[in-house]
Image (cartoon, rainbow, N blue to C red; front, side, top):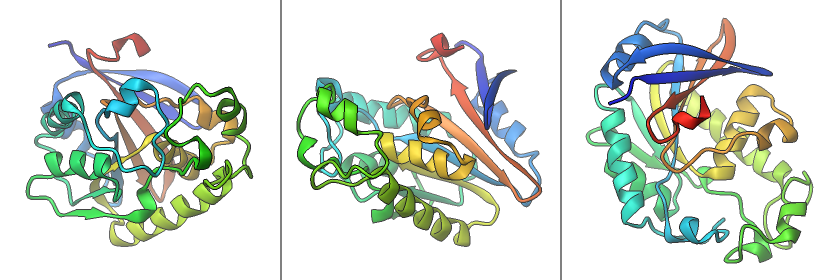
Length: 231
């Protein structure tokens, strides 16, 4: 097994923190955080057939495929030993099923506010559609019956406020979606649309956000054999 390395992003810059640690050591490292720190482990749901085919899912309720279920089991292994206070998913099956595989005895809550961005007329079509590629980052464009980035931002902001009222400190897992997780990072770190585009979380990647009232938020990305090319 290759050593794990965590990539840390802090607002406008990024650097590598070389932690040659296993999953257990990661738990020990994170447990030294101050009691007032909230640690949000941010995962994306496992793979679906539509991910594999390059089709836009949005609000369409697609289930995991065999690879996605295996990715969820691997996520559970990577989080083993981390004491989670709660697990949150969206109400869409691909997120909920991932969380159900992972959560064990930890309470699991599905929130509509964590659902993927709705892509209107583009749902079911190819993600490479030139019209979608042109319009998806325009803040007020609701994509003909979908959800604009500005509307998504307000939904995410409200949902995060609800979650944080329940968890001022401790550790939680959120199993989200592609655009949902981009927007979670954007709201927490105050990212512009252009900065948000630079995040491209794969179905099997795990981020860690640390929130401390006395310090700026920190973002870590776990580097594994599957994404070591990101170093």
